[in-house]
Figure 1 (cartoon, rainbow, N blue to C red):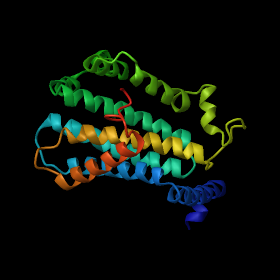
Figure 2: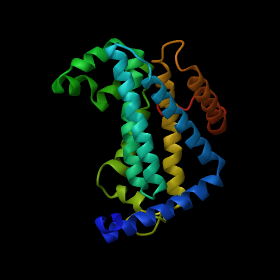
Figure 3: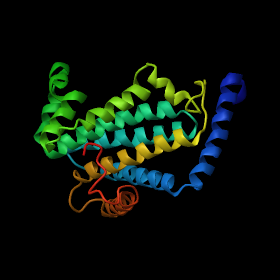
Length: 246
C-alpha cells in the first residue's frame, strides 16, 4: 500500500501541507483581492494553453508558445507551493516567470531576435540574451532609467533565489520571529506571493496576446482582457498600467 512506500515523516509532512491548503482556502475566500490575483493568473494560464493549441509551422511562433507553456507550469507550481505553505519556494519560481515575461516582451517588440535566440550558442546567448542583457535592452527600448526591472529581479533573488541573511525573512511566520523549518501559513506571506503572482500574470497575458493570430483564441483573450482591466482598476486605479518596469 502507498502508506508503506512513502516514509512516515514524508506522509505526515504531506498531511500538514493539505491542512495548510485548507487554511489558505479560507483566507482567500475572505479576501476579494487575493481572489482577483488568482483569477487573472488563471486567465493568463488559459491564454498560454490556448496559444499552445494553435497549429503552426512558424518556428519563431513556436518559441513564444513554449515560453508561454513555461509560464503556465511555473504559475501552477508556484500556486501549489504557496497554498501548501512554501512561500519562499513559490517566490523563487515567480522569478523564473519574471525572466520569461521579459524575454517575451523583448521578442514581441523585435521579432527577428527570436531567430537569433533560437540559433545562438551558449556564448552568444549569454552575451545577448542573459537576464541582465534582456533587462538592459528593454530599459533602453522604453527609455527607462529608474532600473525598476533590476530592482524587482534583485528583490526576488535576495528573498528567494540566493542563500543570504535576507532570504530567511520568507521563512518567518512573524516578522521579528525565528525562521521555521517546513511549511507554514501566514496572511502577510500568502498575500505577498499571490499579489506578485497576479502582477506577473497581467504582464504574461499582455505579452502572450501579442503573439496570437488575429482571429485565434478570441474568448480567452476577451476573458483575460476583462479580468486585466478589473485588476488594474482595483490595484492601480490612477495608473495607465501596472508594469513593474514603469
